[in-house]
Length: 96
Image 1 (cartoon, rainbow, N blue to C red):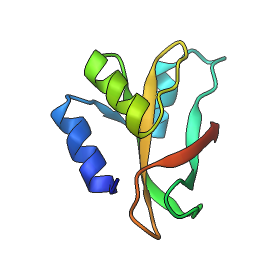
Image 2 (cartoon, rainbow, N blue to C red):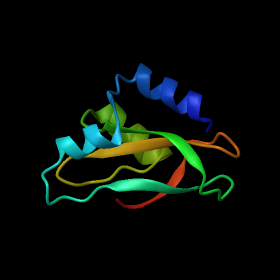
Image 3 (tube, rainbow, N blue to C red):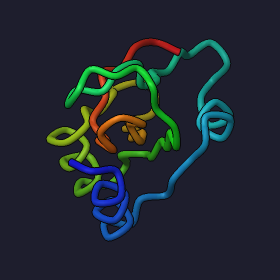
Image 4 (cartoon, rainbow, N blue to C red):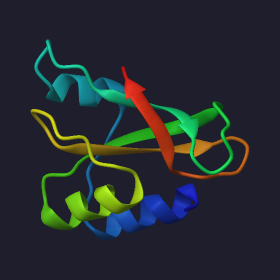
């Protein structure tokens, strides 16, 4: 899925987008969170426009489960990023 399409779908579902700093501020200090590390479409590790969103509503949770993976933690959330090579939005993630 292309980045702008993913972002638009999330906006239609009412997602509140958070920067990395905003996401960090929503979690307890001792809780790690995941960040994108590689594009699932082309394998590139070059990306920008990382956005996090809370998957606290059923529609957002199910979207995240199917499209980008949802992380079950103290706070359920997902993330998207723009691949600089293929403009994809689906990424492999790893602990921040």
